[in-house]
Length: 225
Image (cartoon, rainbow, N blue to C red; front, side, top):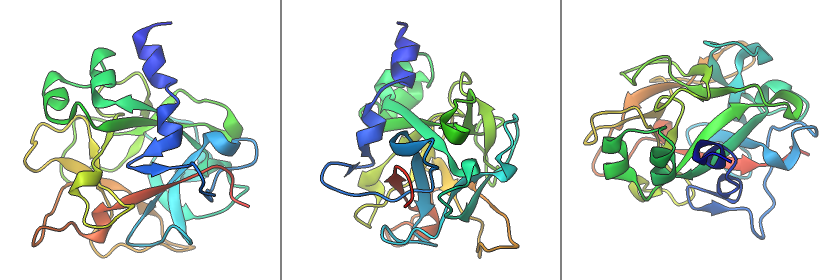
């Protein structure tokens, strides 16, 4: 088995994401029964809580296509568009596999990193949550081939979070390590039945030493019941 394949199939991301562990904890998720315990649901501190995430990462329309927007959508246990499987290890692991730059490894090597593969009904698509090019301000998240280095790898940085259990998620293609590009909700963004809220990237915005809720995320694992 190649090193790259070992990274993509690492089980670590299933048990530890940003300091959250599944041991002794029951996690709810948007995953369908077919996707089951292998799935992960990312939700925003701005819109939800661990007890009630409300809106989770979703592939618009459930379409398996490069460039398909990644949005937040209301939790639904039978919606395959919310079936996302994590594959992860440390940033150093991804660097060894040729998936992140030497600079990213130098700054973040010991941190956990993850690729989020769209797997509707548990079937891998080969497409991951990512960016169409090197991260820039207000770039929308889309599905991209999981083989694309950098832009499909996300770095979890719990040490930068003022809120236990929540963390910023930095895109590994960032080249500005003082103000890295990370997952963010649009300013004033909300979500609802008739409002599609695409996740995008934005430089981390420290305000008085803290990050806004729009740049803090958490994860739930498994099937929603």
